[in-house]
Length: 212
Image 1 (cartoon, rainbow, N blue to C red):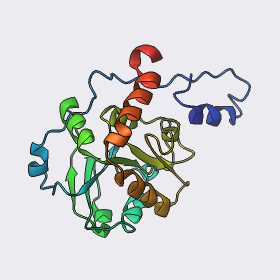
Image 2 (cartoon, one colour):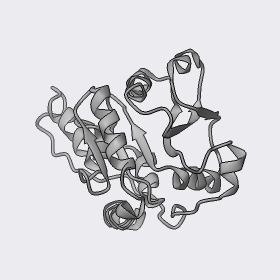
Image 3 (tube, rainbow, N blue to C red):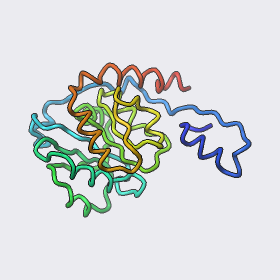
Image 4 (cartoon, helix red, strand yellow):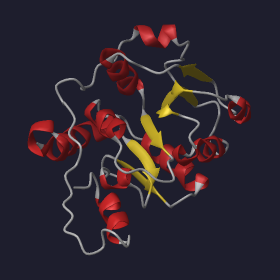
């Protein structure tokens, strides 16, 4: 059993599994725990100007090479720094790369609380996943359930979660410039443009009861 078509194809291309029967069953998410829920106090807590477009970038191990932090940092260079604010969260062991970012940002640590995660994901105008490889992306589905569209690279498990220009934007593989284009496109729309599609797709495909 593979948790995405991407992972299934990797297995089929291996010498061990190429002749085996492989079934895709996506990881399920508890949609009752994730839904649009903006805590307005966070604008003040994180010193965010309400006129800014908020970009979310998070991972359990944010410095892991495959998470593609370098692509995201490079993509931000193409954006108008006056328009955006970035919220990073996750475990950092090295923040040196962040010195290259040209927009205001805040770094949060690893988030243990579901309520806090829901609030942060709901706060974003877009959640970016510039991973070079990703088997699935549970956080991506949680973001959709909070009504926040995604931007990711093609040829990854996360690209299976997105319907291009409906609940997010699928970028050309390993193109920082195209990630920036995706951020600009998604943040040029009001969140209400994505909300219904984000919620319907995520509940249809990734409801934990359906997957079970």
